[in-house]
Structure formats: structure tokens, C-alpha cells
Image 1: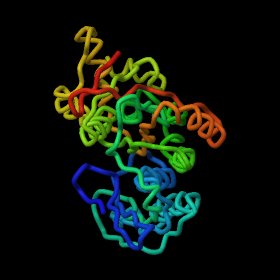
Image 2: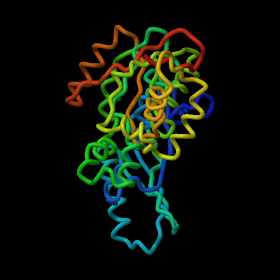
Image 3: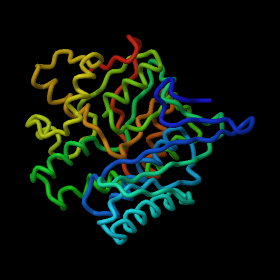
Length: 309
């Protein structure tokens, strides 16, 4: 039913008249020092693609590439972190594959299911839709600040906890509502993944900058160019579809550093009609114990364009 055509989060394969399989795969190198937390973050990140499609994860296969020199204790902690997160999702780790590799890598291949009527794509956003984002932005920038010595283990806890958080709750809050489009925000940053949604839907959007949830210190780090190297490539790409409006060049550059910050295990970006907004906000707060910000609105305009205010 769904492959590469609109950069959706997962492949979808119809297996009956009303049910489809959701299939995805994701892995990456360590983003934190603790092996258990690394495993949990990588697993949460992989599971997120199924949640973004409105599906339920059922099984997962480990993907592991580690140098044998690190020993089995480190590897077992990585796998335990992943297994615990899969169990939290109500799914099962059913195997996997490992190789000896100089650079550590870990992730999951995830199999899930979705009722075809409940399938959510990143295509379908309509003018007037409200845009919601379910986590804070800035994990890439904070990771750069940590490696540069500006952040420590304690100050990084909010970002680490956020990266380990499943998108299960935000996805469950969508149940029973009319959701026009959704995606999870990861390696292309908020700007990149929003652009993909808008481009596939043939619409534009306005972002309310003051409503975008950021981690503490992220704007200053962006201003100081304490950013991941990847973010500069994303900024160059995004110049074609993000409009600065009346912002000064410096203000625009600072904001672009944030909007194009690659996220690890980011939140869900959701487009839903205005008459569904209060219901989603109430369901999200009931499940997650916090509010969810509306960060913008879908408007008529050139496909894929983002305007800031």
C-alpha cells in the first residue's frame, strides 16, 4: 500500500480487507555514554515510525554492530535497554543479528499492525489544520554542547529522558480523532519533516515561533554555532522552503539552526482540523500528564513552504 513515494515513516502492506502490516527499520551510532540508555533511545526511535502511522508495534528484531573488544557486558546493557523499551511498547523482541564492527551501531527492525481505516500518513494535511508537536526541540544541539563540555551528565537528563520516551502516548491520544497527517521528527529536523508533510499534501504552513517547545539554552547555542555538523547541511537545503519574513538575517539564522536541528527519537508532528484540537489536547494531557503545544497552522500556498511569525 505504501512505499517510498511520499517519504512516509514506514512501509505498509495490506494483509486483509481491513488490516495492514507496518514495517520499519532504524539504527544509529551512540548518542549517549550509558549503554542501557543508548539501547533504550535507539529502540524508542525505531518504534516511533509505527506510532506515527497510527499502528501498534508487535515484534522487533535487533540490529547490532559492535566491536568485540567492548565485551559482552556493554553489549548486554545495550540490548537490555532496547528490550525494556520494546516491552514498554507492549511488543516482543523475537531475534535479530549481530556483527563485529569497529563503530558501535544499534537499532531495531519493527513489525506492527494497523487497521486500514486508522492508517495515518504524512500526506493529507489541509488548510486550516492545527499543527502539534509532542516533544521539545534541541537534542542535536544539546548533544553538541555536551561533547564541547558546555553541558554535563546532570544538565543533559531532560534531553536523555525525552529521547527515551516512547511516542505511544501521543499516538494513543490520536485514537478516534480525525487526524489528517502525522510524522515523527528525526534526522531532518522540524523544518525538514514538516516540509515533507506539506510537500506531499500540496500546502504551506505558518509556524508560531514562540509556541515551539525548546530545551533550555538551545537558542543561545544555536546563536553561538554550537550545532551538529549535519544541521548546516539541512539549513542549506531548507533555505529554499523556509521564509524569514520580517526577521533580520541574524534572527533567521538562529532560528534556522533550531528548526534544522536533527532530532534523535523526536516527537510526533500532527496535523488535525480545528474542531479536533481541543479533544487531542485533552487526551494528550490525560495520558502524558503535560500539555501539548499548537505550533502553527496549515495554509493554502505553494507545496512545502514554511513561513515563520
